Every structure is written in C-alpha cells, then in structure tokens.
Image 1 (spheres, rainbow over the protein chains, first blue to last red):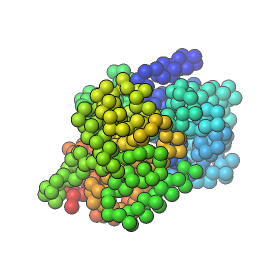
Image 2: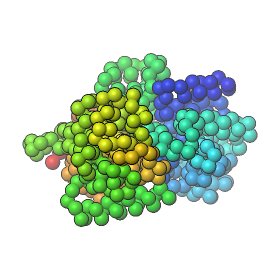
Image 3: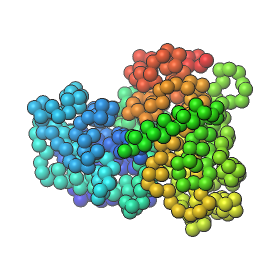
Length: 237
Length: 243
C-alpha cells in the first residue's frame, strides 16, 4: 500500500501529467479498495462538472450520465464537498432516481463518493463503485479518502490554495488533456478496428511500456507523429 | 455561481453581437477589457482559407484581433521571436499567467524586453483549443503588475470557451444556436473526430468541421452524429459535410 503512495508521489515530480495521474489513481483504487470500478470528476473553472478519468468504460458511461442529468452521489459529493454513500441502490436509491436507473443499467449496486478537497475548496469527487450491494470497509473508505487527498494535492501541485489562478490553470490543463485522449482513442479505434475501451488500453499500455506521458502520446497519435501500428501491436484486447 | 456567471457573460455577448457586426473573437476581446482588470486583449486565430474554391475549408493561421495597438504589437512580437505566453499556453493546454513580466524575465529572453518596451507589465494567455486542435490563443495584458483574481481567471476561461465556439462557427459558417457542444459531457464528439480524421485522411479540425457540416445539413445535434460515428452506424464520405 505504501508502494502506491510512493508511486503516486513519484508522478508528482517534474513532467507531471494530470490525466495520466488520475487514470493511475482509479486503477489503484480498484486494486486496493475491493471495488469494481472508480472514476474522477472535477469541477471546471466555469462551474460545470467534467469527467477526467475512469477505470472502465462502464463507469465512464455512468459518470457522464450523472453529470448530464446533474444527479447522483458523485455529483452531490463534488458540489457539497461531503462524502456520499449508497450501500444498495436497489433499496436506497430513491434519492437519486435517474442516477440509480443509470447505475443499474451499467451493472452497479453500491457507490461511495469521496470529495477531492483541500480546506474549503472542493475540486471534484472520486467515485468508487461495486457490482454487489454492501458498505465499503471503513479502512477502505479511509484509504480511499487518503488517495483522494494525495490526488488533490497532486492536482494543486504544492501551490497554495490561495492562488486560485493556479487551480484554474491545472484544471483547464486536465480537461484539455482529456479531450486529446478522447481524440486519440477515436484514431486508434478506427485504425485498429477496436472498441473505445480497447483503444484506451492500447494507448495506456504503450505509454506505460515506453515510459511516455499519456497526454504526450495522445497528441502524437492524433498528429500522426508516432507509428500507430506499434501502438496497436501491444494492446491487450 | 459559476453557472450564472457563464450565463451572464453569454447573454452579454449576445447583446454585443446584436450591436456589432464584428466577429465573435473580436467581441470577446472587447468583453475581456470591459470585464477584467486588463489594459488590452488580442487573439491570433486561424481563419478560412482565402477566397479559394467554395468547398475548401482548409484552415489557415494568422488572423489577428486586438483591442488596441499594443495588443496587436504583442501578437506580432510573439510570432516574430517565436516565444511568449501564447506559445506556452499551447504547450500546457492551460492558461499562462504572469503577474509581473519583469520579475520573470528569464522565461522568455527575446519576448520579455520587447513586451516591456511596448508597455505590457503583466500578461495572461488562454488557449483556444479543443484537445489537440489549436485554434488560437486569447492574450491579455496590463500596464501595471498584479495577478488576475480567481473570479477574473474564471471569467477569462469562460470567454475563451466562447471565442473557441465562435472560431469554429466562423470556420464552417454554421452559426448554430447549439453552442453547448463544446461543454457537453458527450466525449463521443471528440472520439468521433478522431475516427473521422482517419476515415477521411484529414486533420482533426477538418474532421470536426465535417461532422458539424453533416449535423447542420441533416438537422441533427452534433452529439447524435458523434454517437452514430462511434457506434459505426454512420460513416462520413469524402463529399459529405462539405457545402
């Protein structure tokens, strides 16, 4: 577990790529916290919520839906800065009717949303999802919140929170990266005849194997400055 | 709070457009000077390719808008020396905010002396960008040092979004009422742009314009066109989307 903190902290040094960092965060949450999926949404500088990272396409669909209908524990958590949990959407989901319908369609039964917050400033929410009903173990909730805190500090990159302009810069950079990654997924999906999930796996796999920043690789894929066939070869379908 | 601010700026821009035939980008520059503690605003954006054949929508770079001669000169200076906040803003994909240019002199050894000589003491640049598609930059300056406040940065980012939408609308001539697509949570628009660029062998920006063209001519939302492209039930052809 300390290995994960070291790994996350390592990514905070020079050459920091927020998009890459948050994808890593969602993957580590799934490995460590006994959940099926994880996603990160951020409040953009204009006040809208945006999805920036997810561990699978199912959680991606659900988070996007939640943002669109402005409903659900993740949205509530990102707006209020308070943790929001629902241990069984089938019995306790009435509070978020639209979200609950979407979540069940995506195969999720339990949800725990943890705020990404530094003092009084909430920048977003880390959402953990389970396919079975049940509360998350309290130690796992604490660990999830600790990971969320590390991520928040990572995004704010050690700058003092009073420098609001830096927060806006970091968030804008994260959102631009996210769009570039979506464009790269489209290029790889079309070139390799892949699903968007497979395209992301190929992109991330190549970035990790070759020690590239995810955003830098995404830009190279879209601009055609990296050999697409090499990126596609390493994919794990 | 952020939402109402966005609405207020959007409504203000609609009023501006009713009063003036100037481009959205030019109006956004003027609105920046009116709303923010800056002396001048400029933008370098891509424009439509000359007076070429009607179907040619290949974008071309270098169209400049500025609210005063200093802003115009700052735009020119960056292009001449090949460095400065507007170029850095593309590197990061986020704003570049320099509250005191003189104190940060080593950052741009060629740009900074020229900018100070022109009277720019603080500079703030915002990318006009959709992922890898670089449409231009919005560049603000002030003749006294000091940062933009948090709410000013927020306003500038919102205005930059509006300028980005305006540039795309100017490029393809489809001034649709649907200005929300850029902010939509529909990531499929961006995924589809990547697919279409491979299908047609064009740049990402051209792919985006072709999709908008298809949406416009078939009178369906861009998000729906994108959904169909990603689901592989729609494939744009060479001629489609051009008019």
